[in-house]
Each structure stands twice: as C-alpha cells, then as structure tokens.
Amino acid sequence: MNVEKLRKDFPVLEKRINGKPIIYFDNACMSLRPKQVVDASNEYYFEYPGCAGRSAHEFGTKVTEKYDEARKEISKFIGARKKEEVVFTRNTTEGLNLVFNSLDLKKDDIIITADKEHNSVLVPIQVLKERKGVKHQIIFSKNDQFDLQKFQDSMNKQVKLVAMAHSTNLDGTTIPDKEIIKIAHDFGALVMFDAAQSVPHKEINVKNMDVDFLAFSGHKMLGPSGTGVLYGKYELLEQLNTFMVGGDTVLFTTYDSHAFLKPPEKFEAGLQNYAGAIGLAEAARYLDKVGRKNIEKHEEELNSIITDELSGIKELHLIGPKDPKLRGGIFSFFIEGMNVHEVALMLNNMNNVMIRSGQHCVHSWFRAHQLEGSDRVSLYLYNTKEELEIFVKTLREIMKLR
Amino acid sequence: MVICIIALVVFGIMGIFSAKYRQLAKEAFRCVFRMVQLKPCDTGFDQRIKSKLTTKLMKLPPVARFFYKNFKLISWTFTIVFFASMIYSLYGIYNLIAFGNCEPGSGSVCVISSGTNQLAGLVGLLTCYEAYIVYGIIIFVIIALLVVKYLNGKFEKKK
Image 1 (cartoon, rainbow over the protein chains, first blue to last red):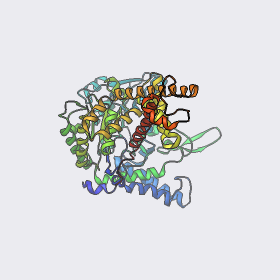
Image 2 (image 1 turned 135 degrees about the horizontal axis):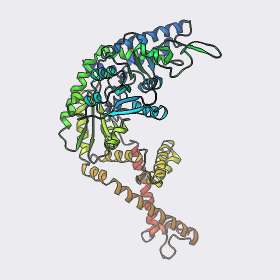
Image 3 (image 1 turned 180 degrees about the horizontal axis):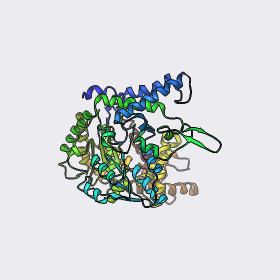
Image 4 (image 1 turned 180 degrees about the vertical axis):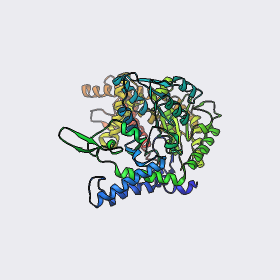
C-alpha cells in the first residue's frame, strides 16, 4: 500500500491552514473523500440527473442502470448473496432504526446489547422499551473486552434480537462476531451489527459471518455524506414490516388498498440519493482496490506507534485494551487534570491536528464510568507516521501545561 | 466562564461595526445567560477562548502554563476590574452631567470637564482620577481589540 501515492487522491490533504498541512485524525466520525468518489457523484448531476425506476427516458434509464450497478457493487463489497439484500439508507442510524421498528417485537421480548453501544443502538431500544414493553439486557465488558461467557449465560428463548456495535467507536474493540452469532442463532435470536466502524476498516463477508442484519454508513468509508446501507438476509427482509412508506415502495395503490414491492424497494421510500449511492459504490471500489486487509494492517501499525510513544505517560489514560491490535485504528485517551475539549482545541490551533473530543455518542458508558469524555484519534488509510510524530510532539507540549 | 461577560461586552461593541463579531457576541450572550441561571456554559465558548489564548502564549511556555492553570482567576480579575472601572466611569459621567466636573469635590480639572479649558484638563489629568478611568477604558478597548485580532488570526502570516 503506497500511502504517499494514494494521498494524492485526496485533494483536501493538500490544503494548508496558517501555512501548515492538515492532520486529519477524525475518521471514526467522517472520512475524507478521494476525487474518484466526488467525480462519480458529480457525474450523476452532470450527465444523467434523472430519477431511477420510473421514467423511461434517456436519463431515467441511465440512472436506473447506475443505481442498480451501485447496489451490485455494495453487495459484492460485503459478500452478500444477492444485490436485493442491500437497502440504501441515509446512514447507519436509519438502517438500525428500520430493523428495530420493523421487527415484530412484543412485550417482554428481550434485546441484548453490549455496554459500549452508540446512541444509534441504545436510544431506539429505550424507545421500544417505553412503547412496546420490550426488555433490554446489557452485557458488561470484562477487561475492556466483550464477555462471551456472560453473553452465553444470558441467552434464552425470550431473547429475540442481539444488537451490537461490531467495532466500537469508543475504543475500537471488535466483538467476537462469529461466536456471538452462533450462540444467538442456537437460541433462535436474530443478530444485527452496527458495522459503521468495521466495514470501512476490515474485510467483512456477511455470508460467511452469517449475520442477519448489518448496517453501515457511507461517510465513514470514503463515500458521500447522507449515504448508508442496511444489509439483511433476503428472507428476513421479506418478513420485516415496512418502515417508511410512500412513493416507490408500492406496486400499485387503490383508494383503499396498496400492494408493496419486494425488498429492497419496499424499504426505499421516495426519491433516493442516487448521486450518493453511485459515489458510495465508487468508494467501495476504491477500498477494494487498496485492499481492506492492507488498510487494517496500516492502521494497526500506526496505532502501535502512538501506543508505544504515549502509553508510558502516567497522566495519560488510555480507554480500552492496552494492545493496539485490539483497538484497530482508534486511540482514545484522556489526560489527568486537563479538559478533553481544550486538548483537542489546542491540537487544532497549534498544528491543525483534528481529533474528536467528548463522549462520542456513547454517553451511557462515560456516565457509568464517571468520566467527562475522551480525546479520540481515529486513523485511516491516508494517515502517515510523520503525522503521528507531529501529533505526539504537540500533545507532549500541551501536557506541559498541566 | 466569567470571561464570557467581558467577551459579551467587547464582541457586542465590535458587533456594531462588523457582522462577524455578532455571532461571537451571541455565543457569549448564551454563555452569560446560562451563567445567570447557574448552569454551566454549554457552547464551549470559554474553552475556545482559553485554548486559543493559551496556544498564542505557547511560545513562552511558563507564561502559557500560568495562564492555562490560572485562567479562572485571571478571568475573575479582568471581570472585577472591568466592572469597577465601569462603575467609576458612570459615577464620573453622572458628576459631569450634574455638577459640570467629574470630581466636584476636587480642585483639579477633569479631562472630560464640560468647562472651556480642555487643555488644562489634559495637563492636569494626573490629579484627576476620572481621567485615569478614561485612559483605563481606552487602554482596555485597545487591549480588547488586540485580543479580538489575535482571536481571528489577524497576526498570522499568510503563506
């Protein structure tokens, strides 16, 4: 993987602020986009700005073809059985909400999650608790990692859904997916993964994994903003109730009836973000070309460097396991006696080092641990060792203020 | 958090002349509004000011460290000085309107005296405390302007 060469695909990396280059370490929130993705999205607007699946004219035909190609590309990217298992959404949150709201959950049905869940998983469950009376069970981590034994002990026939972050945005840890799925399936429960932090960084094959539902976002994997995907096993998608309904979800309507289309169309209400989907497919192609195994290895290498450089500092507390290999591309930390937001602001002001500070939409975990928040470095394919050196040097200077 | 009070006044005045400061004034106002409700400032405005100023002082690490560690105390000091000078100024202005001199009990001539001998007022300013206040306000405004310029990166070299 030639990082210097691929950095040239990201025009924003050439930008200078106050005469200094930008160092972008907020990839768990939003990735940068290569020009190939921007060009692919722009092509829609410039060449065939019509609507898919409706109009028979030249633009309509072309965009239908391109949208279908995009779906095929994404299904290939995640190893789905067929393209109809891919539902385009706005983001991971929408995909997760679609499943939570469309499954036929009843009072006293149990949903199991881990303890480091993003609000996108946690909040819909809390709403279901209030509205339908479902129960929520949390598996608390052991030594910063998923406690498989506790999970196995918690499983029973009342558990209808296991919904978890595949890799957490809090500390980058990944749950033992295959084991969890096997245990859940043995008890007849469905499994849904929030894969927003795993799909962009790891090779995922939904067929081999045997996961029932998997949701991820485009904007974290070099794709356009406002794009996302929900994967679902086709037979399960067929059984799901509809979520948003209206234009394009139906075969026909009369004044008092309607007939829904088959998945994925029955879940894609209204005109879709065609430019976004086409750009997302291009992002998938780009990542496949670079190779997600290479990306994963690169991130681990970089994370090892930061960990080696900073883990010896007594006042710096790392969130998550010490071994960088268990944290993918995430280094989440806080410094004793310093406000996490101020640290992030000073990194930005001094050397344009852009990191995220706060509770990263995992308020529940921070509140339970009585922590104000953390500073999070999240790496991606275009980050370099030189950037890390600047980050470490700047952070050391900031720490002298203590 | 108290720095927001000064920021509100400074950016409020600056906002009269330039729209870009109005947004900052609004943020400062929100911060002050929450402060009077005994709630913490949730805009991050105070943290931004603190971080920006600390960064500027990083060339002198001991000063930066002192500033960072004592930011609250420095903010309080500035705020108290600001309000004290404002009260003295208002008192002086009241005297000027009511009695024609900032310090009626004093034999000295005030720099902002309504009398005809303005030059004498300027010469005699060392003996008139209102004059100190006026000069204090001028210096404060100059410092505030410099701070505003710093905050907006005006002194950064364009490369």
